[in-house]
Length: 469
Image: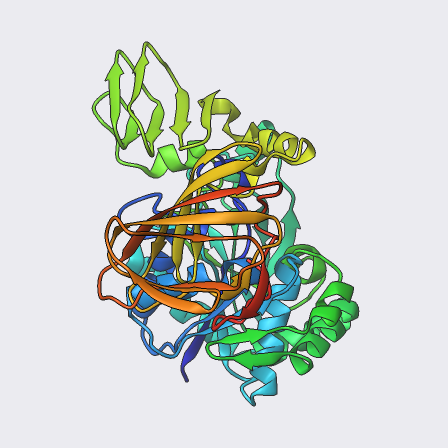
């Protein structure tokens, strides 16, 4: 019987700021190698025996990023993306995927639940763990992958194994002394957040132990709708659903929990230190990426995204540069980066939310300059793609083509612009931008007006189903 992968691709990875942002989270970033963590997870799934095309559970705002990355990878043609209108933690996400499967008559299928942002460096032991866990799941157990700890880690929860494969208890993140005791005992494993179970078993246990979540997600599936490769959970039902982790909602309560030992080279890359630990290093112990110049630096992570980063005399330090932010911290304080993100949110600063480059289903735009009454953007439109038919109340726009060909609807006129040609779009003018060519269209946009927010868009037609950007 085939295994159905469920890939959880929500979350924002705030401890990997400034690289990870709410609209560009860590699972879609190339942290290691040339593929994103999401693509690496999908590639790993494709290497398993007897698996079906994955279901991906994704936040509404990340849907096109995930779809584009799946299409670029090209390993599965008929994947499905389940869209969460509201983020509600892992219990509703997994329950919703199980309810989706049961409604389609596949409640007895084994679901392999995998976070999209984990690294697994031992594919063969992983495949063996999947086979073992699937066999137990078919016996009605809810199987979690217990990671064999190689050091006393205080940043992970632990699982205590009882008789056979049964779970004795789940343990919250311990202090250092307790973590050392757990590692020495041989009975405790890191809690990986990976599971194998059938939809019927999960839903029965959820209905028994957390009926509010089960009922809300059953309703969210019943009220959901198909849209191409997307399935949107019903918004009202999800809004009413409690927000709980699967551990708290179910695994700490069920008598059906089992754990298998998984020595699979696992890391959740939950912090910059964790990324440094799994990265290739130079002879001085430095993990370096981008345009970086070091002098007398040891055991540090230095990453440049846009400009030269030079460092002298650092020890156990992380330095991360992006176009709009630089992070510097001792390596042992890497978990505290989330406190910076919390301050950015409280101060209503946009750096926690987006990068200067923002990806859209039609391409991307990069903010080059932003002032009170004007901003300058570089816009890239993919071949054959087009933006929505739209209008702005508060801003005028000037477009200058840098390369490629632009088809522009500007009020009542439709014109073709080539390199070094331009057009002006007054406020309250209905307009649309399209790339009719076979190479990317690059243009510079200058916006002038009293309000320049992305929510100043009245959209009349959009082939991507958006009501706003």
